[in-house]
Amino acid sequence: MDVNTNSGCSARAERKQREKARIIQREKQRQTVKTVSRLLLKCEEDRALLQEHQDTVQELSRRQSRRALLKRKQEEVFDDAENLKAKVRQMAEALQQAKHVVIYTGAGISTAASIPDYRGPNGVWTQLQKGRSVSASDLSRAEPTLTHMCIWMLHKVKMVQHVVSQNCDGLHLRSGLPRHALSELHGNMFIEVCDSCSPAREFIRLFDVTERTALHRHGTGRLCPLCKAELRDTIVHFGERGTLEQPLNWKGAAEAAEQADLILCLGSSLKVLKKYSCLWCMNRPANKRPKLYIVNLQWTPKDTLATLKIHGKCDAVMGLLMEELGLGTPVYNRSQDPIFSLAKPLSPQEQKSHTREEIAPPAALEHASPDTQAQGEATAVQGGWFGRGYAKARRKRKTV
Image 1 (tube, rainbow, N blue to C red):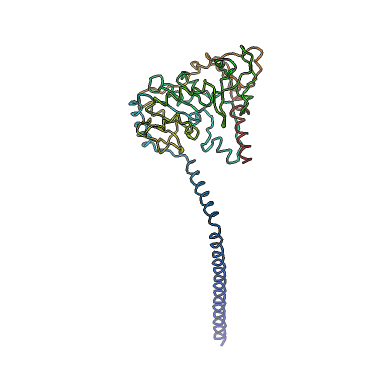
Image 2: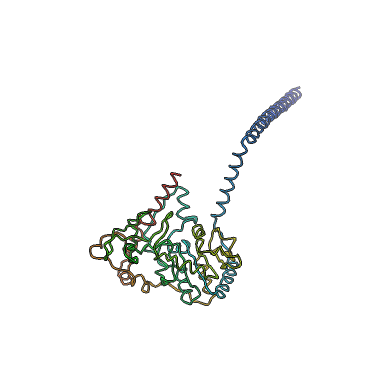
């Protein structure tokens, strides 16, 4: 009897459990139907809204496409080792066959000297776009890189006739490249001039002369020893037009481009250089223009016109190139740095006219203690063509 009673209770409990499960399932289905209906109604409303504002939809789509394209252009691409060697071999053959080679250089050739570039992942403009601050260090501590020295060697063996640089760091001059074969389109941080004298009088220093200068304000505070007019720096800031004959040497750059049958671009985004039409011979038919070789990790606006694009770091590419050409890889030697013989000393009254550290001659380095050198390397320097440019650019972007 007790067994039958227990078995009946158990069956009722199971039926109740099944009924409860069915009720819960039906409730879930009802909720799902309600949710789907609500979403369908919302989709209809959204579709109607999108239909009503087609112009806005198209504009937002264009913006998304532009952002995606910009992101792809900023990505760094590396050729694999085998492909890199093959491309360098092809470039070496072209250099050997060329009669007049011109090299265009950008900030990418100086990153190995701890000088940041502008548009790379850690570049100046990239960091400012992300709202990050950029500290400036004393660039006079930098030395010519392997790429600078390879360019010097290629000119020495007459494989390169002219170098056009966007850089203001003076490292091409310090590598030993002769002035007549160099156009520093945006100036040189070690050179100040008197443009009141005719012709303009040039003064090369052992320190960064741009400590007190900025956009549209170029006076260095020092005076010309002959006419007593204030000296000015040679830097061409963004938004300015360079008018000095030297060290810009626009005449030399234009003449070299006109004669060139091969142009090699190293470490430049070409976003600024592309605007200088005299450097590209675009007035000629395509088959009459110089062959274009580009070495850069990121996209450039000249990629589609290039005979060959090499995705690699400049030092790595130039090292391989020297091997292919059978030339030794030159090394920078401070004792042979021409800036020490070219520099004009300050007058006694001007010794305290700047606070920048001077480039130490080899003898001074030998006597400097490691602690002193380390202390100097850790010092951040603000102002000048590098530091103040950041602040101005940042304020301008915030205003926009």
